Length: 89
Image (tube, helix red, strand yellow):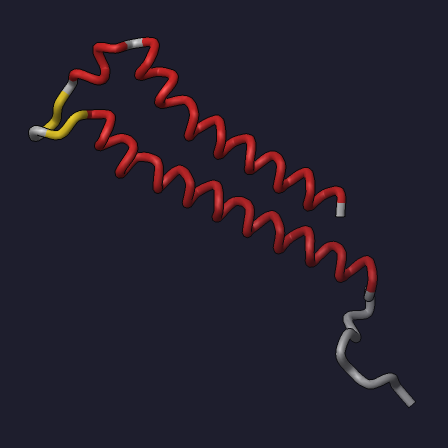
């Protein structure tokens, strides 16, 4: 239980750090807000397209780690792997 909480909090902090970093960078360097690419502001392009792959990667990482934690817990609770089968007679 603690391992899943730690994993959740780690992924949450990482996602918040990535999401909050760009507005902070844009506020500290106002020249970034004036850059345009194909008529679109760079900030719109970054917010619209660059964050999704990062958030998908964080979600993939979380899902992979959560499955591993669940498998370890299942092995701990039922080491013989007999969950869901009737007992041997």
